[in-house]
Length: 588
Image 1 (tube, rainbow, N blue to C red):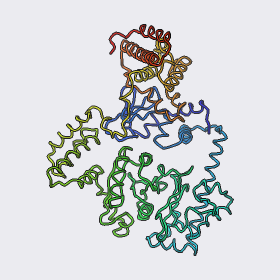
Image 2 (cartoon, helix red, strand yellow; image 1 turned 90 degrees about the vertical axis):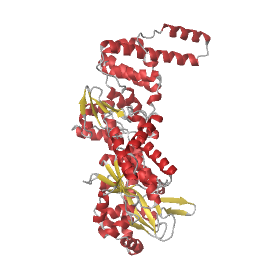
Image 3 (cartoon, rainbow, N blue to C red; image 1 turned 45 degrees about the vertical axis):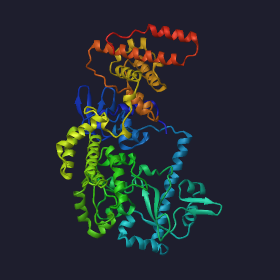
Image 4 (cartoon, one colour; image 1 turned 180 degrees about the vertical axis):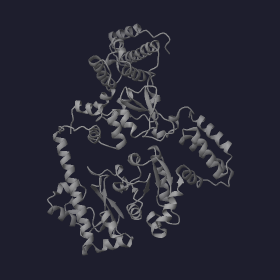
């Protein structure tokens, strides 16, 4: 599906970025820009900047960047088309008929067939459950204390004991073998067609809009595997969907309850906790965290109370924390899972456990404590040192670090001043600066901007400077051509920016970003316009900044060319060109 650049630009211009972002994030004006807490990672000090002049946002912590369209795509987990439609409706616009390629039309039709086929399969399974042949499946669900209303609400079903029942039904509905294989519902071999699910209780998996996109099946008897999910297909990505989200997204609660399995979610919903969701046969992913963060700011982990459940919680916590969620961990002792707990103690007791759920970091430290013998001096010392390290690398804010240090010291009988001192020393030994919150982020999520070459930083500075001071374009263009930029991407962005400045006399970075929305490098494009450059610099300081940046870029270009050249005459020419470069006075 294709919309012209003019349509995309009109939608963007009719949605001022401060207004749109401000409806999601509390912003405060500071100078020419607005600042707030980044919605894409957890932080305590505002590093998320929104520029009304450039119509773009940039986070100096996690480096998320883009224009109003990419913001909606990232925050709402929308496709480009969905974000454009959302913003058009917000602005009271009616989008023109989009131009579709043959590939786009074929993909849309294929998706439509798969969705309809899954809906038909769900109807078949549910009807079979209620038939005399589905008695075993129905009795299993009733034995799990599910009401008929809950069975209907979740569309639960049963796949009978013969391995081709669904195949024959879908064949009657007109679906082809290729379509059934494409949807992961039927497999084929020399011996014939075989339903993926048979002799299993069926749990339809729905997306956020209540479309059936896959199934989960629980075998009756001793068959293996006990639980089986649909394979990933065009309509089903298990890392981007959550069981129960179609209901939980409408909750009035300020948190989601995160469970491990279908029955946990169903039991909690039946008990009135309609904000429960679960992952689909996979560990929690950053995409799951981003989806949850769209709807709530807090997650209560409700994993099984055995060792595997605790380990799953420990894996999920840093992912959810990185998504910007506050996390607590619920204890279900003496029961294993929410289903057993609800049946044993009831909804009121579970609600009380939610209120008493432990802070996630303290839960992590309590689990860590089990690895050490605190009666042994060495064990206690090792636990103390590891605790200090974790506080240092987890919490960038000094107030937060102090608060957690005092809580941990109180619980484990550490001297609070000694622990605080160790946290500070631990951070300094690892090069964690108090003034650099990004350095405290997990190593796996740190950005690599500190490894950028001086030439790349100079290129970003020039692009940012021209976006904010278009009146300086004439002097820059005389000295710096588009081809002087170091990479194909930065040269392409410079070409578009130069064209805007020549034709319109002003820069429009947001429009340039729109040109790269379908490109995986769109974030890099946004970052090119996000140098920390003060608009309050004097004219003299601006002149100096331009001279230094141009010199750095041209010097790097010539040096790179000299390293690759094999022709002696060309090498001499480059050496002469390098000699002509004059390093700005007062430069570094």
